[in-house]
Length: 187
Image (cartoon, rainbow, N blue to C red):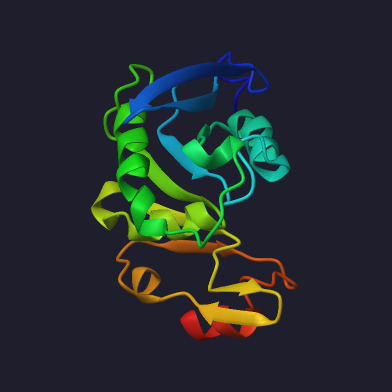
């Protein structure tokens, strides 16, 4: 398909953006094919890593060769070790701002399909986004409970249950934060 139109589907273009969010500068990286793409994945990272996470990097290196645009961003806590529980609702305004900024890029068609999500905490944050802002959700290791030692407490499933867009759950069978039994009940 790519050769028929004269495109080299292996070439990936990289964009770096910085946006101001309060007192923090948020780093956004866009990896895209060298042709127009109307499928945009916006992926955030988990609580204890950043957008350079191995899986997110793999997706950013691979999916553009198939014609998809992948945008990743760092939360302000990406370079720090924070204490306490991750509060997903707190980061919804940042995720929305990143999404709005990406929509402004001139190389993204106006009627593109946006899929939001990410790993762990970002999966939960994107579940809180109003579903009219995207075409679907991609949850990579969506936390359904948090654990510390022998203590665990459940995550409120309401944000997942109130979606009107398709949701893709990618979970490891041994993920301690996303027990298979809870995911099956959610589905």
